[in-house]
Image 1 (spheres, helix red, strand yellow):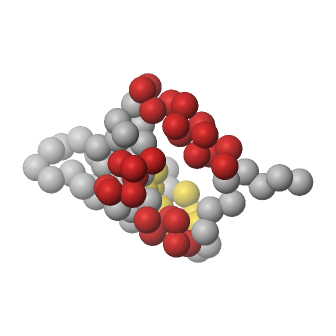
Image 2: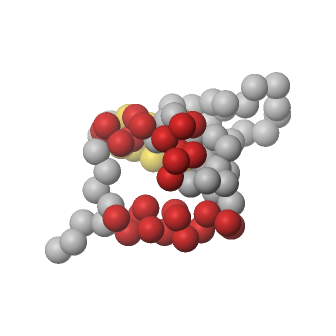
Length: 81
């Protein structure tokens, strides 16, 4: 499970970069078009995820070199039954 505090942290470049070294943008955003700057490239997935009633967007910027880090992070948040 992920809590609201970590979700907010994942909206920052510094926290995301600490977890996933090859990622250049925050893992989570409030809008699909966040962090575009002057680029035309949207950095977040088109379909939002509903998190406690709030729509959030997940980055498309996870690179192959961070695949194991993403898997490890995900596994650390699984609810063990």
